[in-house]
Image 1 (cartoon, each protein chain N blue to C red):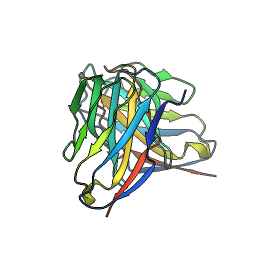
Image 2: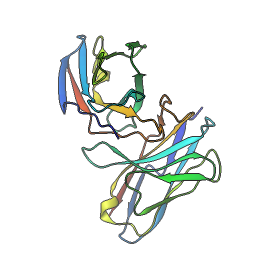
Image 3: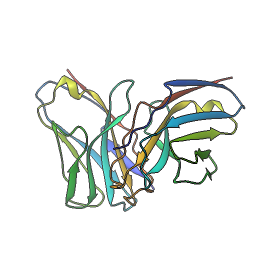
Length: 110
Length: 114
């Protein structure tokens, strides 16, 4: 199964954009890229997903490299409530198993 | 809608005891999952189910059992609890499998085995 690599931690100032990178060099042509986040003491929650094209929703944007070997989750204006662990996950062709790594712990500085 | 409900939220077990973690969802989702999360780590898949009567192993199934007799319920059974099973357990559900389904998680059950 294809794996992802993310930085362990990142910091951002409040109200500034945040770019969270993810490398997935062994991604297959049919794997979708999913992002989830986990607030302290809560279960993960869905953020966004995509295949090839960039995607936007009310929470974030997902920018996918042309070769699909990397992607970036973009939070346009970080708030204190965005402090969480962000997971980049590949959904494989089986589709029944998500593999979570250790994610990126985002700290938002007031 | 309540979404995904897990009980109990906290539990302390002695080594060798058994217990069942309950998970119920009211979204009529076919796909359900159990994960465990050790301190400072990501989530690891224990078992999953693609529908009533169908279950399959994930990454770390040893020491656990599941059943899926109804669409709504997906209990996780721990037999002969061991300290290595001290963790936070999350149940999740999804309306679809495949590559695009969104997972909905419960709030977690924190288990300590002493």
